[in-house]
Length: 260
Ligand code: SF4
Ligand code: SF4
Image (cartoon, rainbow, N blue to C red; front, side, top):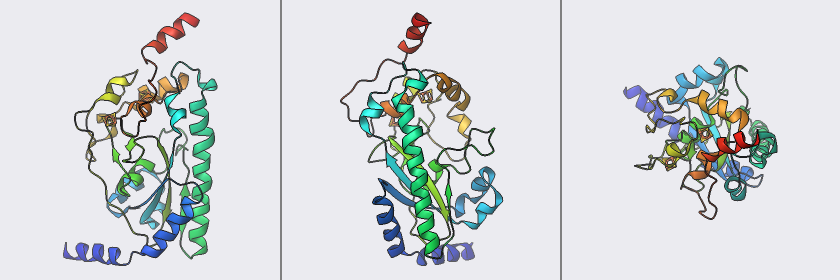
């Protein structure tokens, strides 16, 4: 145990704040709104359960967030067809690739400084038939101290609520790591009650429980095959401008059957 505490202390002492500042500045001028670094050592088992074994060579992950534009979130509607959805287009055709390019640039910069770095794709299942990626960007952002996991299972940030997309860069660079934030969701259940398919159970995040205790992933992904849904992002009071009312999600089915 003493040995473990000693190793932990040594790791913290070796962290390089000038390099961390430099990488934050580099990311910011390429469009990042949030930047943090996660210590992956305590989560290694989970990380290796998702990604390939060579991920064990990376003790840290940089987490970078890009804010979603308010009107894009506020004016999205579950009444739209997915192929007509400006929300879907912006999130998956614009913001996610922008984050991938940004992560690639950050990795190259770290490589040029003599460190290993791997940009984890922003949205790519691994293996292909699974719904999960190689690394949970949410886990990296949470461990980096950029936000907490809300009842919606989204990463909720103090600055922008869930209106943020994340990407991660695995690295061995000695960057200064953050610490997870407390979860202030409290009695709020807005996202739980707003989900049109009841995908959330309303339980608070508990790292000891599997995601199925809080979220039915299949219900959500089946619904999203037809509907460009981001209601749980739009309704969260954290980061919400409050200027625009969301359409009633229960009207989505009625409208569809009227127009079928
Ligand atoms: S995206 Fe829509 S269907 Fe999926 S969990 Fe959020 S509110 Fe529910
Ligand atoms: S809507 Fe409420 S319960 Fe859901 S994530 Fe946001 S603050 Fe938490």
